[in-house]
Length: 432
Ligand code: UD1
Picture 1 (cartoon, rainbow, N blue to C red):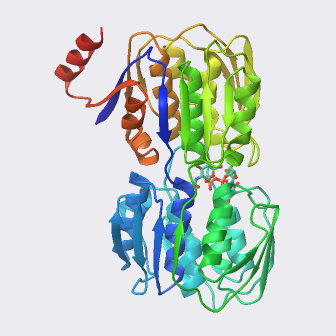
Picture 2: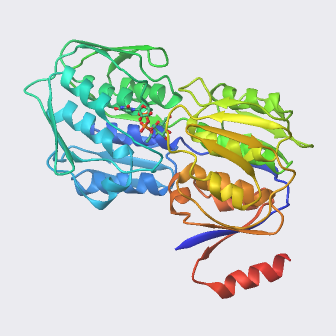
Picture 3: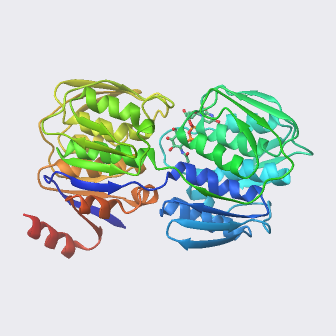
């Protein structure tokens, strides 16, 4: 198993370029199965979760041509909707988008229940409610979601909870349904808008993405398209927090500053310098940050996917901060690891109370999920001495070239085999 070994204490300086949004790309690549024509997707992040989805698409008969590390051409003419279960689909969350897409195209889908980060109970009842409202019969049997319809008909669907996954999945099923579908109380995340824009580029008729209500007029057929995925809001936010936590000065390029408003506002409140440019943000921090309170909310609120990284920054800030996690109840698993590094954080249910300390000290810590792993890496970059972050598979699944990008910015971080004690000793000697 690989691990990151980090020597803390070097502020991050320079420029970093943000890649395409993971969660957009997963929706968009699944959506390519809605047409028999060829689709080219640009700015696809080169990460494991995308590899898994592309391998899964190939296994069901799609022609997948990776033109370069960020461009994929897909033709899904020959795919079969039957019994999609393989190790790749079981690993990732985004595989659930194949249920909506295949149901839309074939009126039938059998897909294994999705995997993904273990951050709490992750039901898909709202996805199922949407498919049923469109006329499908849906059952969960032997770990598979089985959905089937004679025909899909537009309907009025009200989501009981704001769900990114359900919003996108119902859109995927509804674009080829007969008549009009209205989905209310939908998620407004940038990647919901991106998937809707992509579907519209294929000939769909979706209006209102980015607002509370999405209206879809079903069309008979979708056609091929060339499309570019938006920049990853969460990767950008992670580097913004890393710049602040290490007291660095970083220009984060290829971002849409509007998508980063919730994080920018909080950083500014804490005393961090944030300058917005057209497609970049400049983040700089010269002194210890102040406290703040955070409550994770659906977009445009503070994203749950930046909660661990922000809690890590607050662990080093002055005063007491309160973090309320209102999306995923089990998202504080990493807190024990930060405490091992000297943080003072108490968790009670969905709330964490952080008493800021002046510094953290290096320790061996375990990354329980993708964003928790990113938070621990940032903690390591700030800490005195050497930090070992174990179980980095999740981190590599969601961040392209994380280690390389941090190294370019002056961070001291190396990926190593956890069995290779000699390499670890050598690293420690070199940096001490
Ligand atoms: C997606 C993102 C994930 C992000 C999350 C919230 C992908 C692949 N993953 O996950 O990175 O953390 O959005 O921004 O895009 N819920 C239900 N029933 C449902 C669906 C969801 O009760 O049918 C609840 C969930 O338990 C959670 C909340 O709704 O409390 C939001 O979940 P959702 O937005 O669906 O998250 P995911 O799509 O799983």
